Amino acid sequence: MIEMFANSVILFMKGKLFQDQRLVLQRSGIATAVTAILCVVLALVGLPLWAAVIIAALVGGAMQPYLYKDLRYR
Image (cartoon, rainbow, N blue to C red):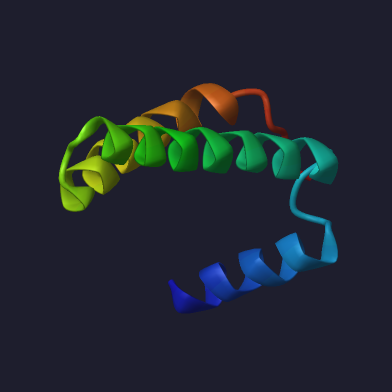
C-alpha cells in the first residue's frame, strides 16, 4: 500500500500521472480558494474558528468529486 502511494506521488511530481497536469492544478487551486474564502467568511460572520474550519473543509471535500470527475489518468 505504501509503495503504491509512493509510486503515485512520484508519477504526480514528474507530471506523468494525469493526462492534463495543468487541469489538475487548476481544479486543485479552485477547490483550495473556495475552501479558504469560505473559512474566512464564516469566521468573519461570527462562527468560532473551529466550526468555520470544519464547515469549510466539508464543503471543499464535497466539491472534489465534482471538480475531478473529468480527469484522466495516463
